[in-house]
Image 1 (cartoon, rainbow, N blue to C red):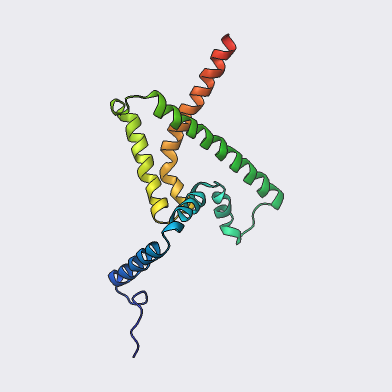
Image 2 (cartoon, rainbow, N blue to C red):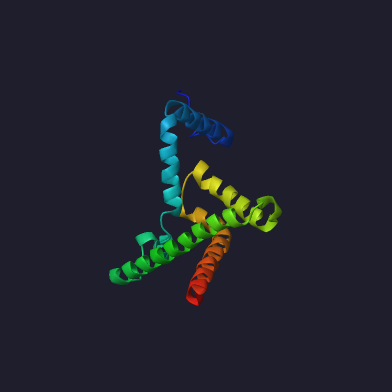
Length: 160
């Protein structure tokens, strides 16, 4: 009788070992493809934030919105997501630039470290929109920093 594949056996350790070996073999054989795969995982996780609309309609199984309304909601969702992410990037840049030395700013260091740890999961394993959930608090804080900086800039420009 032929030996059964470790992936088909009921032993989780064998399946894990087989999968790990296959992944390491792929990395050894195709090392230059890893950066492109990492970029694809990043885009799969952070490219858009309209996955909730799909979940709301059971991923196409139950249509509760007219196509025109769904398209409008999708555009609004993507637009707001882009604005929040831009504000978060501004907040991140300002946090790294203004809060020096960083080691003296424990709260910001905590936010940045949890952001980096959360980012490692989808980039090392696989990308999926659901992995954004752990980023929400850090993104909100950084977006707030970015928005406050823009508001302060507008106010100071209006005074002059």
